[in-house]
Amino acid sequence: MRVLLTATPIAVLVLVVGFLVQKRVSEVPNLEFNKLLTNTTSDLVVTMDSAYKDADGDLVADPPTDPVALIKPETIIFSDVPGDRDEENRVVWQPFLDHLSQQLGLKVEYATDLKTVADQIRALRDGRLHLTIINTGAVQTAVNSAGFVPRYVPANDEGKFTYEMELIVPKGSLIKTPRDLKGKFVIFTDTKSNSGFKTPLILLRRDFNLEPGIDYDYKLSGSHFNSINMVKNRKFAGTETTEFAAAVANDLLTRLVAEGNISPGDYVSIFKSEAFPPACLGRAYNLDPELAAKLDQAIESFDWTGTTVAKRYAAEGKTRFVPIDYKQSWALIRDVDAALLSLRGQQTPK
View 1 (tube, one colour):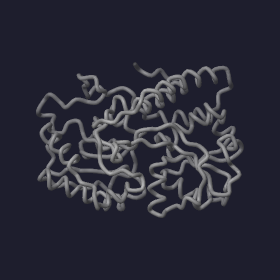
View 2: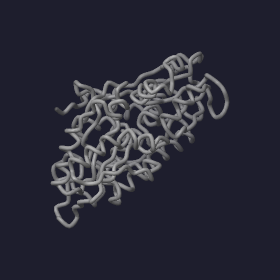
View 3: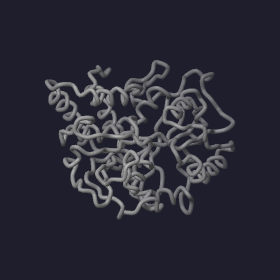
C-alpha cells in the first residue's frame, strides 16, 4: 500500500515562497542570511542531469535502455545516512544485510568509508554504492545528480511514516516560544538538512520575523545527534547556558530518548512544524532490472521482528518498510528548496 502526503501543506509552501520574496524585497539585504542561502543551495540540484532520462514523468531516472550501461555487482554496497555513528549503524543493519544476501545469493556489505552526504551521493553516482538511505533534504539532489531511485521509508503498522521538525531548548530555559529567540542562539545541524536547517531557517523568518546574524546567532553542529547532545549538556559553543534552541527531526529525537541518550526531562519543545517524509531507502537507477526487482522483493520480505532494526525504530512505532511515491511525497521538500532558491535570487528551472 502506498501512503502519500496530502497536497495541503504543499499549497501552503507555494504561498510561503511568494510571501517571503514580497516581504523582503524592499529591505536591506541580510548578508549573513544570504551567506547561509548560498551555502545551502550551492550544490542543490533541482533538475535532472542530462545523463538520466525520465520518460514516464515520475521525476526519477529510468533504467538505461542500453544493456551495456546496466550493472550486476557481485557485492551490493549499502549505507545508512553518514554521520558519527557509522559502526553502530553497521551493527544495527547487519540482520537486514544478511537477509538481502540470503535472498539475492550475493554478498551485501556496509560502506563505512562515507563520512558526509556529499560522499554518499558521489559514491552513488560513481557506481560504488548500490543501496542506501538518503536524508530527507538531500533526496532531491541525489535523484537528480546521482540517479537515486527512492523506493521505501520506515513506517508504522498503519503505514504512517512522516515526522516533524521541532525546536527544543534545555530544561529551565527562559525561551518559551520561537519569538523569545531574539538575541539568543539557534543550533542548526548542517546546511543540507531539511529539518535541521532549511525548514527552521525559513519558518523563523516567515512566522517570527527572525533573521540569522541579526536577530539570533547560530552554530552548525554537524548532525542531529550533536545538536540534541548540546541541548542535553546545556552547552552552546563551549559555554554552559540554557538560552538557545536546537532544530531537530523529532523521529530522531524520539529514537535517542528511547536509547537513553537524552531524557524527556532534559529538554522542552517550543515549536513543531508540519509533517515531512523521513529519510528514504533507495537504489541506483542502473541496477539490472531483474536484480532490482529481486532487491525490492527482498526488502519487502524482511521481517523486522526481534532484530536490531526493529529496536532502532521501536520508539517511533515503525515496524516495516512501505513503498514511497517520490513525485508526490517529496513535493513539499522540493517546494522548500524552490523557496530557498527564490530567496537567493536564482531562477529555478521549470
